[in-house]
Length: 108
Image (cartoon, rainbow, N blue to C red):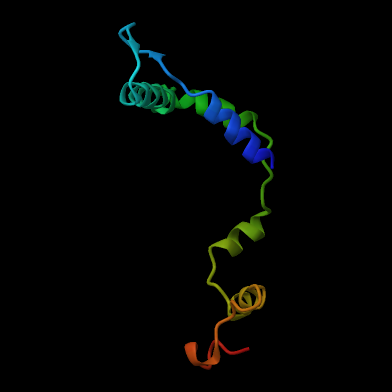
């Protein structure tokens, strides 16, 4: 219901004109749309490139959790059948693979 009220209010307040980059006023839908596109392109374009040292200082100040050495070494190891089985069993109902789609090495 709230969405309908907002939609109705938005329809009642259309943008009929907009100031363009050159200072003139645009009244057509095309001019208004292009002004918004230009504004958002400028807003979301790539940020200013910072020196690598700035990033290093920022990351050094972060209090990020770290894995113990043993766990970091395990991350680079092979994936075990037990891990795969655990993931398959953890899938939502109706999302498990069927017997016909996997060989005997996948069956648990």
